[in-house]
Figure 1 (cartoon, rainbow, N blue to C red):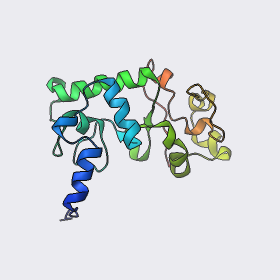
Figure 2 (cartoon, rainbow, N blue to C red):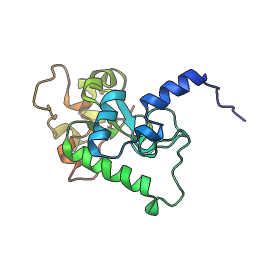
Figure 3 (spheres, rainbow, N blue to C red):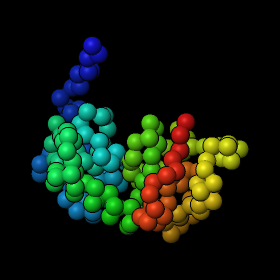
Figure 4 (cartoon, helix red, strand yellow):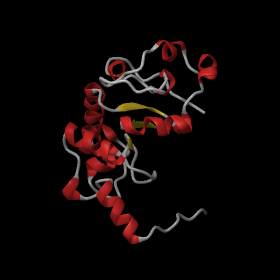
Length: 172
């Protein structure tokens, strides 16, 4: 059986603080959630402690060992995370979409060029790899231009995602 690598306690403490895995720094409001994603740069939406990296769900729970319950319909923390996700999308200040392995995540605008370098679709491949809906969509500019960013990296328009189901994603 594959054994999980042991991480030094000082690194775990740093992660506890940055990823809000402390009861004193939990995410409770949409403003808290927005600040959290801006601070960490990107965060998974509804993943628990079994997956590496920052997660909105874990930040809402405020503990390192947060695990999604089997029946999430009645779980208050899962419900709050779901509500915050919808509110963040409506506010339109963060990007939301599915990247590697189809996992939903939030990305701070400052991180888009970095994600584009890793997962972006080259302009010559857009016709073949993106759906017609994704190709037709105009990028969200957040009130200012971002030279060099093509529509292929505008993962899912936050304004559109507020009213339509998530259907387009960037896959490698």
